Image (cartoon, rainbow, N blue to C red; front, side, top):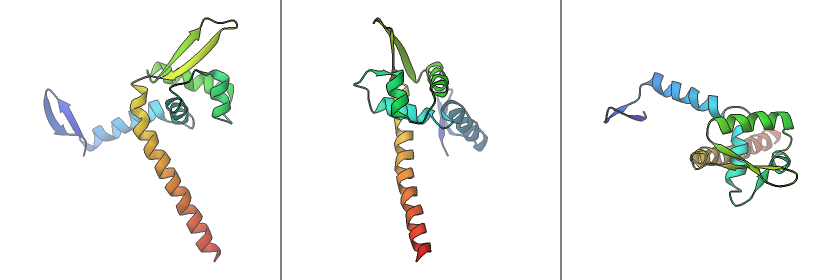
Length: 129
């Protein structure tokens, strides 16, 4: 069980509280693209990432979907959108310090995904034998 600090006291979260917290997390991070966008930006904190570069890096996301996901990530304080004073105007995106708190989640998902791919390959090769 997860610990909660309430009124200065630590207690165990109820199952319902844990499920609500998970739902909240999935509401903010769920879908096909948000975690990939965050991972991409987190791995490139030293670069200026503009919309087209982001779209090329997360192929095959459409411009419409990328725009929607970026707005939602910005509303939830996970990324920043900065308008550069250039001609033509350039907009860059970066992960916030708060957004970096999602990195352990993406790291765990990457590790699990690699492990899962191996399990599936093993399963397929053993079933072919």
